[in-house]
Image 1 (cartoon, rainbow over the protein chains, first blue to last red):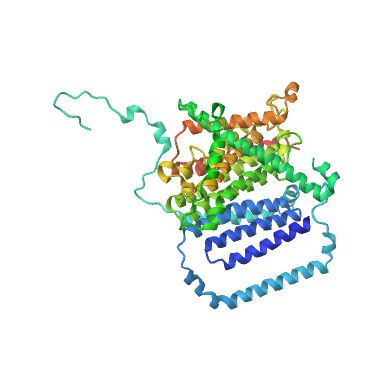
Image 2: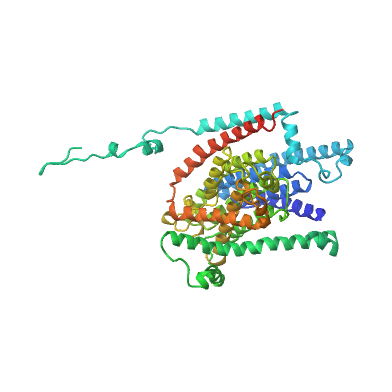
Length: 203
Length: 346
């Protein structure tokens, strides 16, 4: 069953990755990308990393990809122009692909020669082990606490930077001030007068 | 049941058949419940507007939803000529499927849960964040202005409220010490003054209110139904849909509403536990207590729908980002500080 699920998820990830690149319409590309994320989460579940799987879906599928989709849908894209740079960038792309392949080969080779392969051959955590979340939490907040805090600081700086870049104050904007509206009383806004006949009211 | 089937026909086949049967055991009654809850919604709404509501088909109009279902089933599916055909048909299927998926981890009783997983609550958060795709894809694939506006609104709205829902969930998880739904429910047993509910705790009650309002926004019910505001956007993302594809949106939407009512009941009001920790009340099966709580929250949803006027878009964003987000973030700090002082002080 697990083998079957693995090949199902893995082949969908590969296929949707390929479709993501070859799709003519950018919106379709994003949707294929989302499918790839989703099935990658399935792969994470198979190795027993359920917390990582849930995070992948919540963060990437649920938030990042929605923003991608949001932006891509609003764009008015000229497909011919998009294809024009293909031949020019091909050598660079091939070079990047080569580097990635070599990295993967090195990584797998090092992993196998070090004997870690046998140690983790059993799929999934042993029964009765503390859950993913507890283990991750225990590591993140003790051994890696400074790295973790540093990552948080970097994200905070990025967020503040994004806000500073997009913040602009425009003049002449009429904003709703709800506190003012609630504090307003009939006496502030209305006045009872009894004008004499033939005379108007001065406001 | 799965264990029995595994004895009968081997481990994997038994697991497969057993799980399939359990899924049907949840999904089919859920569909029935959705049909009835649409009827109940219309009845409550009608009663608050001093109307009769559906009362022609069947006794008291009970069969109205089924008649409507049959009607849309017999209609023709119209696909606009400019629409992106594949995605146009995929969108309602996504909405419907996602609405059903989340029910896998909902506990209906002490041992009545399809998948009792460690990360139950995270799973629900993940699945509910997928719900926006049905709406966004529908709006884009229709190739029509109003559905597109609606899709943009839906995307922004759901992202805004998901953040505060996440923080509310975190404060409950801190209190329960687990992401597992069963642990969260059992943790509420006799929580305060013998009442089985986190909501009764003054520390968590504000979060219960925030969660209730956020769940209205998350399911795009009134007063946050800007995605289908009929006075501005015709019917929003559903404008171009007809027959079964329209019905799938409708079913998915109400299944989501029921899910949010269930989550309100489970996270803050004790799930399948009786309201008070008193032995005779445990004679009543837990599923009845759960259904009673779900129905109560559904009544609240209908009540709000019948009485509260729709928010303006900037007011919706203000409520989400300027009020709920800081409040729930502060509350996470407050709850964890309280727990540090009491439970984990050593």
